[in-house]
Length: 220
Image (cartoon, rainbow, N blue to C red; front, side, top):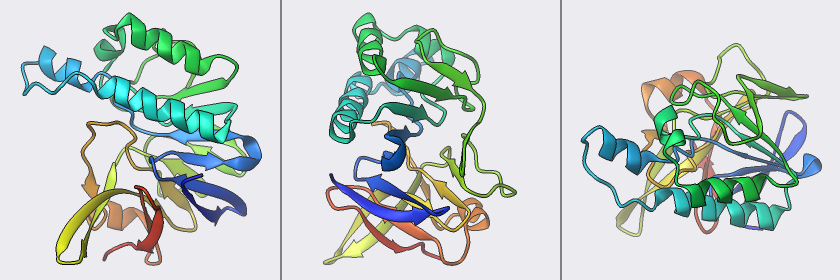
């Protein structure tokens, strides 16, 4: 499995190179900010048109992660769709694909700020979920501990061999993990931004996504 294992709240988690987080003891896969239907929404509002392949690409990577981990529970940490209209406009083949991924699995949609209401795609819809010792919600709450969240799409730029490389990252400290955006066309917020600096502690690790996930100190 292409991942980096770490201990959080006294349990072992694996940050996958794809941007998914796996809890082996629970056979639980967690992903955040899929933003399915982003190209459809941009076209609908008259924004710059994107190639309409991002939903299929995102679902293909999710299918691979489910096959590799053999996860029986999936938690989508909010902003699974770019907006509610994008969920409604999802083409039938993609709707069937999601149904196939859900078959035989417990599937939980955590509500986000882009998709605050339920969608007619099966699974359970919650604003927040607690599976001790962890809390799953879309936006980090500074008062929480043992929290997994998304929303901010953290990324980091490294200089290697005379060139800059930007990767999506997991941010991990003793109280929280902020997941990277899993969706194909999602941008990101630099990990040294004021917002992320205010949420994360001084010894935070940034775990790089990509072919070989690895931890580096979060830039300050």
